[in-house]
Image (cartoon, rainbow, N blue to C red; front, side):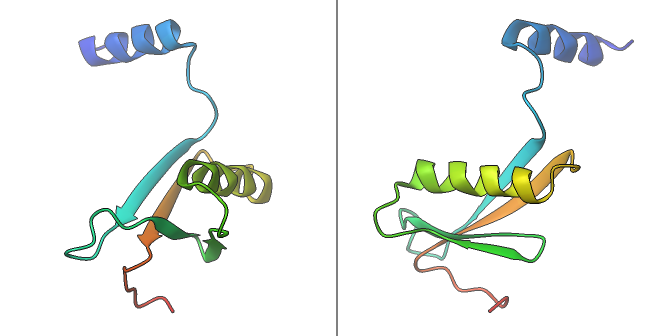
Amino acid sequence: MSTLDRRIEALERKTGGADGPLMILISIVSPGHVGAPRVRAECDGLTFERTPCEQEDEFIGRVKAELLATMPQRSAYQVMLFGSEAQTDHG
């Protein structure tokens, strides 16, 4: 076992281990709009829209919960977050 593996194992023990699947959140930001709120998320063809009264952390939590319910067999998810000013080629 490498030193890195031992360190990771020690950190996981200290924090209680991995807590479910890995969620990688990638925030897409348009130049000049760094602080724009995240209003849409996409993952594997699924699109999630933030509701007007939903806080950003609540939105991200809902996206995570819906992904886990929709695709529970996955060990990792890559979620693209888009701000209100970000433009994409996806639609």
